[in-house]
Image 1 (cartoon, one colour):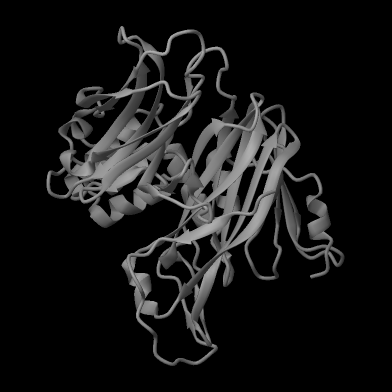
Image 2 (spheres, rainbow, N blue to C red; image 1 turned 180 degrees about the horizontal axis):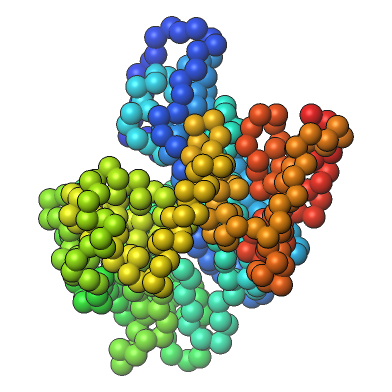
Length: 457
């Protein structure tokens, strides 16, 4: 499988550092966070899709060690995709990061990369695990359900939209090169007011039939309640069987909020031949928050939030990470002030069944009390996540001190999918228990996980 290439997004050169002890450690300033976007394009033939996994890692979440050339760090990534009980693809690679001076960490840059793989139609359970290279106990992971279906062959079809931080003429040596362009992913689709919202997608089957008349590319942006805020059109010629569609919108024209981009190809009668859509997010400190974002839902905060100050609200938001959507997380991060955050969190939970927050937060409290490890709150561990998402297991089989295996635990849930288990392994003595296998359809599956447990400690 093709190995991933990495880009360290940087604004300029970093000044040379001062001499330091070779053994010196520069610890991470933030929790390590991995972000993931997926874009699906036509594959090498009609039966496959080219799936690109775009990922971003916060550099201030990594640990750096001093060496003769400066500071060395990085992220250890593991990507797996499963269909049912079968491993469809998997790989592990290192994303290197180097600093000349630790002052560069404060610049808040990210490590951005792309991993391409050709896949047949199906539904895949994808997991991306990120470990701090210099401190493997610090990690983050994302699990998503990913349907894949090759584009139609009997009509005009379009790929997913890929949001980008930049699109420019490129060379084949770049990991982000495609169709003569370098498309630098904007993982998460969040833009500040000073950025251009670039996007890239592809159209296929343009020469089907006898019609060779020009098409219209219509770009429409909708706000959170579906109101058109941008509509523009431009002509596209049918000069080839496929075409690259690239455009940009200035984020400075939008208030902070959630927006939907819809790109459509129209025939001469303005009938839609195909379209693709995707959400993006804007943070604009100058224009403030989109009023539609705050007008949705109830007008008064839940009683539990009425006495919370902003730090407590932020803590509540962090604890809610397994319940709230990516869009809700992005929206919250754009807000400032306790009153706005109280209302926003209240609206989130009012959209859930009655009592959902109480049940969820009780699980968070249990996870934090029982699964914390080395300064890492319990809700951020694998066992904590499983407990919060699925509830208390019906049985826990613990193996902490057996002479021929590393410590491991087997959790069983009898009432999920007819009965599932989660297997956790302590790979390194004194470290946290890591999820290495599950029979749940949407979780990591590795039938050979016991081999790792039986390796010598």
